[in-house]
Amino acid sequence: MGDGTLAWHGYRFGTPVKTIVRTAGDNHEGVAVDGLRATVVAAASPRAVLGDFNGDGHPDYVLRNPGTRQTAIWYLNNNIYQSGALGPSISAGWGLDSVADFNRDVHPDYTLFNPTTDRTAIWYMSGPTRIASAYGPTLAHGWELVATGDFNGNAYPDYVLFNATDHQTAIWYLNNNVYVSGGFGPTLPVNWNVVGAADFNRDGHRDYLLFNSSNHQTAIWYLSGRTLVGGAYGPTIPSGWALVATADFNSDGRPDYLLYNPASRQTAIWYLNNNVYVSAAYGPTLPVGWSLAEP
Image 1: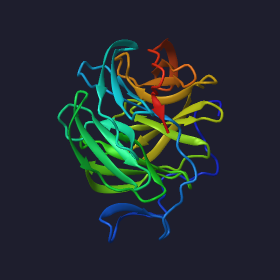
Image 2: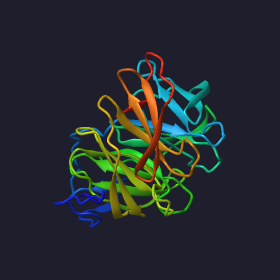
Image 3: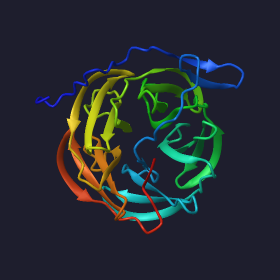
Image 4: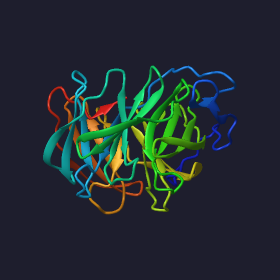
């Protein structure tokens, strides 16, 4: 692996052995796993939620208070805190999993997931204000929503799903909150999780950003639609820190890493050129009782 590429021996990529189906009788889209529902055995790595909520071209932090379920938006200019506003509180039983503009009104929306019912929901936002909501497709049990991004080039965000039992990923293509079709993506090696999706090699296709919380290694899997076409290791994260999201913080057209230290509540941004570390800067530290990342 001296050339920096990934060769995950023993794993197969992109050859579906199951099918995405619309599950009869319960009015939702599911993933058939040999005719049975899978069992959740592990959670994905903690992930942060980012979006440009004030339209200034810079990604902003979405903070969460686990005690009150309140959200807050911190407006950033690169790594510098500018101001903040409270967002809506998340309903009990639901988690905030991602942010994307589902109704194409140029405002990022909240994407919620309920691991008990496997339901998804979209809260349509105008800045920090919730203005409407709609249910999205329901996942088959054993799958979780881990990222959103436009994988088929229709300008609508799609769901990236992960099954912790067999490490399979899947992409569900959406039109706003409506399921259109779906297919399997590559299977991840053990101990690796998807923490984000972005176009690292600037080929017009979203790629998987992976993190191994056991050894703090990062990797980028380059995709064409749902198909794995290549991979490269990224920089290794220091102990005590986690890779929680990706976004272009310095407006150079390349995605960067967002790191979070849960013990100190410190954030940091690692500026990248594709998979190569270029430089770093600390971001703002969160107040006591607030978190940037949740599983």
